[in-house]
Length: 133
Image (cartoon, rainbow, N blue to C red):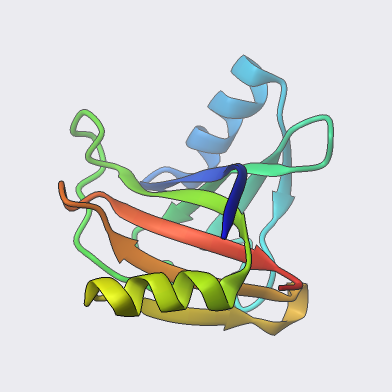
């Protein structure tokens, strides 16, 4: 199993348009629709100049593969998870099983993405992303 890069951050907000405008203007990121089943009304992704969706912005009512309470407006309270782009999905599952760790999996067929959600010892939610793996 190899971590290849930090994949994205996810921000939960009660102001989807204002948040997207902030990142577009401040960081010169391009706003695009997130893939289905998300909609333009509940999610938007901000892309860098290399075409990577580095900031995912979700409304409070946006469906999530791993749901938990989040309070927008508190310092770092709106940070939902940290996502890492990884390789070797099967090895990661084996490592988690060997540790007796709790985790959830998800598959987004439209973009060929397998995901594993698990928490670190400080209860920081990690989203481990495996594209085409």
